[in-house]
Image 1 (cartoon, rainbow, N blue to C red):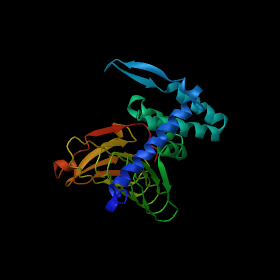
Image 2: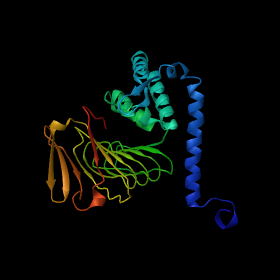
Image 3: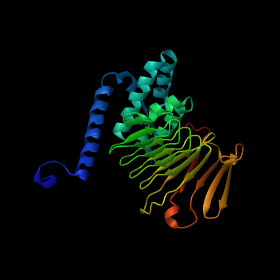
Image 4: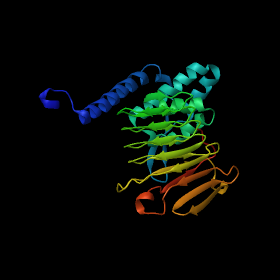
Amino acid sequence: MGVEGTGNPNVNAAALLERSYHGLKESLYAKMITQTHLKDLMKLATYQLDESNQKIYVDLAAITNAIQEQLSLDKESGKAMLREFTRVIRSYQIENEVGFDQYREAFASQSDELAWIIDSAGMYTTKGTVNGDTLYGINVDNAIAGLEGNDTIYGNEGNDVLHGGAGDDKLYGGNDHDTLYGGAGVDYLDGGYGNDTYIFGRGYGHDTIYDNDYTSGNVDTIKLGVTPEKIEVSRRGDDLVFTIKETKETLTIQSYYYGSIYMQHEELTSQSSCTP
């Protein structure tokens, strides 16, 4: 019946409705765009069998090359193509089936601008200023960039992507599955509840992760932008510390050894480059 019988949704129902509407809008948009502007691009997708698990996955190599070629010919239309195709992937929730990390890395390694295009496609976007900002997401999937300054960013509900940018930032993911990029500076990252992803690499400075999600089965992922032999792992009190040998930059997992609720970071991946 809503609030006091008025038919108006209460705060919890309003959040669910807001997210449902956003999801429906993105789904309808994806169906339309794949049958019009992206029709020829979609035909380039091929399907491969993964022998290790006998699952079919979508190979985006030809699509990635086509977008890259368009970026070379006309940067603005290439960026639009990249944004719209990424929006389709996110709308259909098929990141795991298409090798999304490799797709993202192909473009994100080129510039921060292309990284942001991918991370914000199909999401509610908010950008800060050159000053120290406090930014809040709404109850949908948010992409929030603090840019310069010492920023504090709250993702709220939804699967959020938070970019701290330059400066000493504090990032709070909230509920659901969030991705946090501290950027350059001394940053504090708290993904909150959910299967969160933390990004760190050269140029990120000194970041600290605090995550005491006690939910059974939840596993967070740390993606380091350098190969394993270039990382030194150590214990400092109850903290686990990753140090990039060349730059001495550090990623600290606060209270990792204190108790099981702080030890959810069971997945650790390394890659050749990492773009904030």
